[in-house]
Image (cartoon, rainbow, N blue to C red; front, side, top):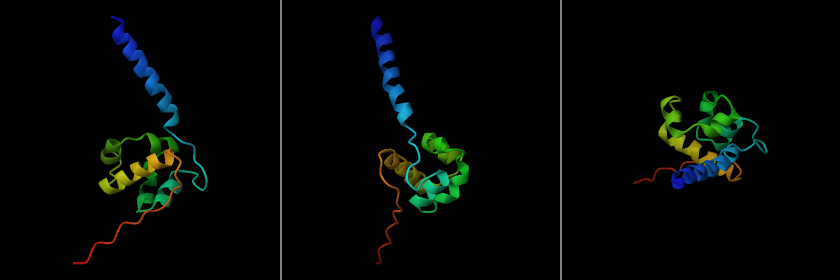
Length: 103
């Protein structure tokens, strides 16, 4: 009887502490969305206008990036990967694509 209520309460607690930590504060040379996307490179800075705020950069999901913002798959995955690395405290840097092998 109380199992369902307890389970719901535990889930609420579990998710409540992650929401506050989901959006890190800008740090270092990164002051806004444009700085973030410019630093990671690969032409991601062209999508800076799609994000209204710093919070929207860190809370928008992949489906919204694809359907509403029209960001191509490779750049979308790259932005999402750097978003998580930034949350973990990594400094931003551009990672160039490997050149294709000659046959």
